[in-house]
Image 1 (cartoon, rainbow over the protein chains, first blue to last red):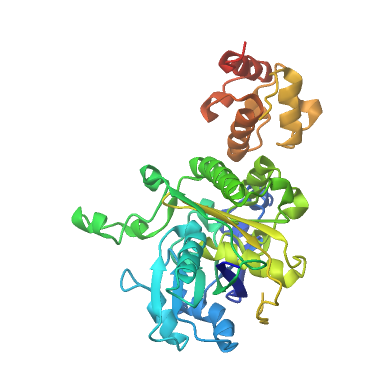
Image 2 (image 1 turned 180 degrees about the vertical axis):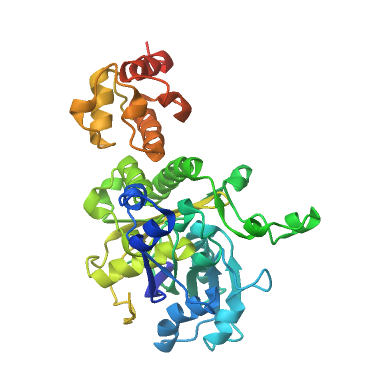
Length: 337
Length: 81
């Protein structure tokens, strides 16, 4: 059988502080239903002061490293909230995990980052560059969300999750072809304007809001639905899989209405849609691995089940793939949620 | 993809089935602005009109027409004979 990259472990971590809708309804003076009707989100988690993205990533990945089933030679971290503009956060995570010496780098594709990181890591494994790779999605979105912007404050939450990828014969646990894409002409739709060379070279000091996330909600909604459904469709076609055979749709947990619009377009039945955002909000790069982790812990997925992953985020960037649910148990972990 | 013929009933079905609008609230002379519960619903509607009828209606146009006016707008963009 040809060697492929298979999923052999999943682990997630959420910071303990829950920010329920009541708190935000009070803060913004919103009607009771405002948040749930628009987003389907009931609660989200925020990091406590002093907790950065690398801390989230280390908490999420530590159980997979502790399981110690072989050396991990690569750490790929998807994030849009790195610890600093430089260096990358992945080497810090690797060192904290006791993996100094491993290849470690960040992937910047925002909410589509995990699927991009997965494509990178699986390709490295299939090419023989890596034997066992840790793919982590981690974001401390509360550190870049403007607390006075109700449109983003209600949506985003913090969290991290990690997947272990290793070489094995293709079969259960293996990934199908990836569909990745971007449209940089729309980069202004979701942006953090300050802190990079564009703002610095303009020679104008940023105002306070420059370091916050700015998102044009309505165009993003439309682009998210269009690009996720088209990208997912291409990934299904490349895998030779009809949408009717999809057992689980794990779409980026952007917003319940985006998720449903994508699933409706693809023709994936409501009971096949994995919904995690009601409890954790949109956790950016962590959203897909956290939803996979939630699916695994729920015990609903059976070995061999066909899973469709699709994501969309700032860039614009999008990415999709398919996965056959692993036969072997994924390294168990017990964490608070 | 099989496209639907534009009609008052076909548009009403979308409003009821996809946007949770009460069927009793829908009539030819009702302004669309009174039926779309929020701005996201307008985006959802334009996506659905594209899928169902194969036509592109801009979000800004939705708020300017009645239900019957929307049907006419769809018909005017419908390239089929």
